[in-house]
Amino acid sequence: MELLENFRTIEVETPVDKIVSQIKGLIASGQLKIGDRLPSERKLSEKLGVGRTYIRDAIKKLEFLGILSTMPQSGVYVKGVDISVLEGLLSNVMKIEKPDFFSLVETRLMIERYVVQLAAQRRTEAHLEQMEIALSAYREKVNQGLSAVQEDLNFHLTIVDASQNKVAKTLMLIILPDILNIYIRENVCPAGEVNKSLVEHENIMNAIKMQNSAMAEKNMLLHLKDVYEFSKSKVSFL
Image (tube, rainbow, N blue to C red):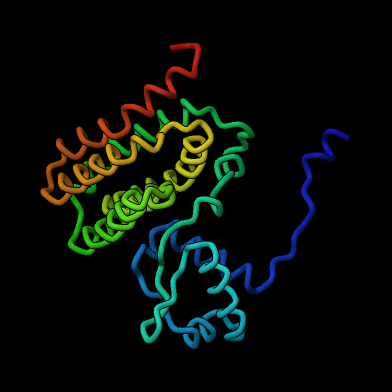
């Protein structure tokens, strides 16, 4: 009976589900970035071999999740990556039912300290524009006193985009959502700390803009210091 529990019910995907999956996969791989415009409904319909109604429904679904945004007379753009969509991805990929918070944060630290250096070396003007859009969205939420966890995720993903390392982005998409959800549950970053986090984000971006790898790494480590210390306090072997 225990072995039977390891099997899962087969779920048949609809054309809409498959389109949604493809778009999310392109975002995860870095082929679609925040601010990118999707091809027209007609072109997508022809390429995917499905009716335009399916394309339209998939776009609506992704808009509801906060991943896409339709701008009248302009087109459909990538808005961001929704945490709820990615929640539990670590468990699914690595077969870990209860990810260890310290291990997650430690892994994030290892990835981001080097990714931010690469971002400073490899960033283009287009990358800086993406980062500014994400940072502005984060700043707006902070100034309104609203939760900015989603915007935090998007800002860090634009840094990974700037590093031009697709493997690093995939790893970040796997671990970040679980980390940020634990942040919320454990109140790791209380309301009074968000302004401090905003300043740290701005410092990281300025270092990337100046292409100062050492300063970018220093600012990233400073940004992650508090959460690293918090996660370290949760384990017994340190």
